[in-house]
Structures are given as C-alpha cells and as structure tokens.
View (spheres, rainbow, N blue to C red):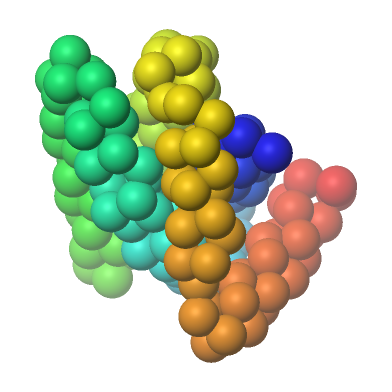
Length: 177
C-alpha cells in the first residue's frame, strides 16, 4: 500500500465524522434535542483522530519527506499546515460555543468546519497526494508507509478502537448507518 493510500483511508474516517457533525448541527438548528455527550464525542473524535492522530502523521512523517524529495512542494506543504491550524482553531471555537450554549454560533462553526475540512481533504487526496506519489521513490514511499503504520503506540491503538466504536454508534444514531 502506498503511504498516500493509507492517509486517504484515514480521510474517509474523518469524512464519516463530518457527516455526523452535519446531521447534529442540522438538528440543533431545527431546535431538536441532541445529547450533549454526542456533540462532545464527535468533537473529541475530530480533535483526537483528525488532528492529534492523522494531521500529526502528515506534519511529522509525510511532509518533511516530501519537502526533502522535492523542494518545489514546500509551498503546498506549508499551505496544508496552515489549513491544519485553521481547522484546529475552528474545532476550539465550536467547543467554546457548545460550552457557552450558543446554538447559532455552534451551527455556523460546525458548517464552516465541515466545509473547510472536506475541501482540505479533497485538495490533499486529489492534488497534493498525486504529486507526492510522483516525487517519492518506491523506497521513500515504503519508508514513509512504515513510519505511518508504526506511528501509533499500543495506547493510541486502544484509544483509536474506542473512538471508532463511538463513531459507529453516532453514525447509527444520527445517520442510521
């Protein structure tokens, strides 16, 4: 498996969480009842998996190798890192809106985050990763893939399983998937 294919698989998990967040924000907008723990769970998934787990891999494993392999990709990598920081700030803002019970701001922030993150994932999958596949040698790609696979500790794997279980429960509850 290519390193970029591995990251694309993780993107699919993030997109699933965004589907749940979209549905929750629609229910909040309609003033329908939503369990606070569900909002916390989907935001925790995004904070832990999308940021601390997935984006950390991109920033510490993939991006440095890409820049080393092709300096021309430096601006693209910098742009993706800036977007990661924007996404972190959006999650923080949404969490603040939830704590302060600002429903309209929560809905607006959730929509902004899901739109921004979907667009970001599209750019990585369809633009950046295609370039990465072209510049990395098979040996470099294999080395990056191994580092991505072994990035997690045993504790991370346990937490990941718990977060995925939570995500599946949220999908069933809100999306009937």
